[in-house]
Amino acid sequence: MKYGFIGCGNMGGAIAKALSRATKEIMVSDRSGKAKAFAEELGIVYSDAETIAARCDRIFIAVKPHMVQEVLSPLQKVLGKRKPLLITMAAGMEIEKLEQLAGTELPVIRIMPNTPTAIGKGVIPYCRNALVEDETLKDWREDMRFCGLLDALEERLIDAASALSGSGPAFMYMFVEALADGAVACGLPRAKAVEYAAMTMAGSAEMLLATRQHPGALKDAVCSPGGSTIVGVQTLENHGFRSAAMDCVIDTYRKNKELGK
Image 1 (spheres, rainbow, N blue to C red):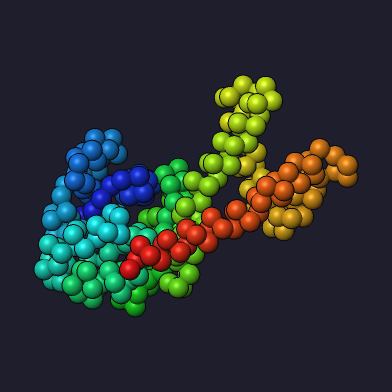
Image 2 (spheres, rainbow, N blue to C red):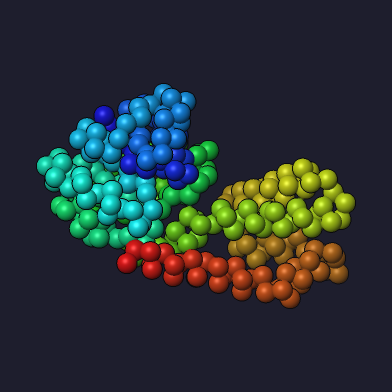
């Protein structure tokens, strides 16, 4: 079997779903058994961690950082013998630490995905150790093509990227919700408010990526002199919007570093 997932929660499930568009050679496992129906829906195999470690060539470790040791400890013997590619998404956990918990040196790719991966719009920064061959990386990237953007980073930058793109969807959803709440307070029906806010965010992001203009320049283009938009911008500034956005990323980054210890 080509791929295995030890753990299949929100993030692991999102990657498995996107990956299944490229290959059905996938096994998934979880403790609760909830992933069984998920596997049936995707046409992949539901199994257990021991079978995945023994049979899969590329294994996603899709559990929380504090669970990695418990998951890998009973698998050390088979991992040491087979040396499959491990793909970890444990926040804050460096490759060297994962190898220690696996009890052996083996090829490792460290990724920090986000939930839009499930619809092919994810951002997945990644790094690898020296045991991951170029051809293996190329093939893995090809299989992951339906996930979204895969971008190589130095490992020292992975936690910062995770704080932005990994946690970022939660921040984006909060902003959409807050904008929609404001529109509802002004009389717009809830469903339309949410749809308009979400489409405005998506369209603005697409325009930024398409034009590659500085976001400040695009903001200025919306703000007519003496108009209503600049008043709204002033309100955000008065309430510390920019500082709050910066601090939420910085504090998330610090927490990521703590989780990996």
